Image 1 (cartoon, rainbow, N blue to C red):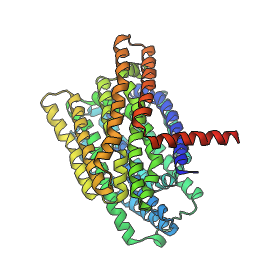
Image 2: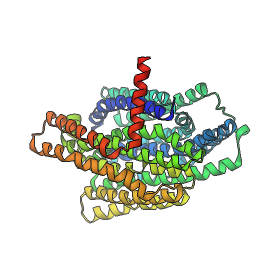
Image 3: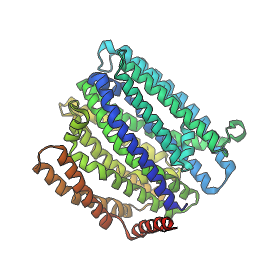
Length: 509
């Protein structure tokens, strides 16, 4: 299978998984919200959110391992592959242990008057915290297995694993709706158990399907590789913790000023964004192994081209769903949740806009990761991202609306994008001007053109399901036309048309 065809096949498989997961989420999230109630749902997102955001940490650590595995694959060295895999197992065991210790230390302080939680719910919150620490440890030590599946570009296996996890989450939501026990505690335990099941499945798949990977740490341990991967994974973990601190630190700040109800709104906003983000993550996941292998081949031109494709098409895919959802968010939330928690509407819109800006960085971050020279980059980005928390606290202390905090997030994310472009030029030789001209400008023009008519329809028609459908369809038609004629270049046109012709010719035979 050719590279382009493989990327397209993996993307289709991953999108099928995303659609199934999205349908399951549409059912399970309202069930959980109704079963727990707004207060307990907000409490869960506050307590578990810090650790739930470790999916982001997991993804960052996965990229670190995948980077070394993909570069080794680019050199066609089987021994090197096993060295990287076994060193990665030891490394993540160490990282998992350290993070668990840190969270246990934090747990000694956060429940003693620091968080704004009703006193009778503190015991339940502590139990949830402990169950999710266990889940966190197993999630971290499973990273090498997920990295193997990604590096091998076996997205069908990856998708099936995730669908199993999503189905189990739906079953948990249904069980919560029909029990009289403490639902918050059961939900925390259930999520932890499901995470462990997912990890065991991933480990079994790697052990059975990819026999070239053998688990023999003593045989394949290399001190220099451990040192290199430790530095790389360490800086990645440092940056991921900063991102978690930003996303969940704001949840703590909101809690201090507004209580757990606003945490429910913030939790729903992140759920909405999570569904949309899965659309983009699927494409990035299918193309990242090729990007990483470009570094192993020492092909800078290919690295730059794939990086720009990753950023551009990630943004195109995300915006296809995000813009009409931003326009019609009020009606969508009512249809989905009935009576969404206060602040949910504008928070959801702002979080999606924030992520639209962040999506531009997808290819840039992967290219920088591929170089391996990430220490200064991660320090700079972590400092910049972390500024969100003190600024947000200051804004709320001054009496500003919580929406100002998310507006601050967006401004800092724009600055972060510019900084990533500078680092990508310096480390990966991706020209600042090329990226701006070929990725940001054409896609921004497409968004501006495509949103005019749907916005007019939004303000002219009454708030009904029909309006949501009309706005979405009109936007889709204008957007696809604009993307094809403005954002997609001649080379991409010919590649796409060539793949279509190839599929047709195979069908005839």
